[in-house]
Length: 217
Image (cartoon, rainbow, N blue to C red; front, top):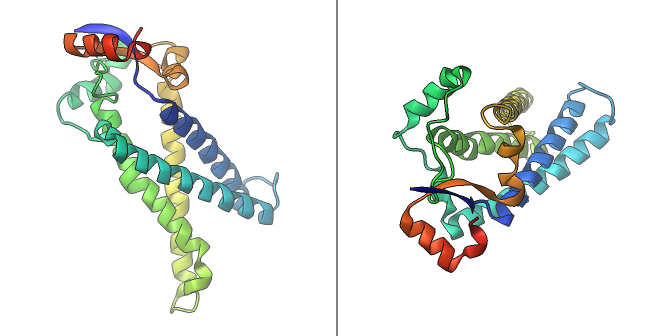
């Protein structure tokens, strides 16, 4: 195995990542405004901006899902049991003892087992939960005449807010993880220029050098 710097994050992935981050931050800001945690925006403006940002993020996710399946990049998000314990042990204990991360990125596997599991749960559980509850809340006028609609709306709002705080927790942990191990810059740069250190087989290295020289350094 040879370790080389390889472009493993495409331009669309980087655009998707940063756009998603900005929209989620804006949604949290406006969402907190809706709940009265701040008064930078009045209630009507907070609701309008929150709704517009939500639809923008939904559109971005629709494009990202299409991209994942047409490019077969969905495979990077399938978790595996192999190596899971080593990664868990590292984050629980090894990271505080200065040990090296046990996982090495491969050309065909961008995410370690724990990352893949976390991202998969976000995509198939948490994101659909917050989107479903948000749309149900938004279209309350369609079902407001059913029995106990007000109580059901309170439950939907609670689910939506709980999912939002769970996403906020993920964001905070994600940012914290960027400060561990290598330098903060080393963690962030792959999502800026697309290049990261990857273990390559001789066949993969030869393929990149011959067919995609612009993607290997």
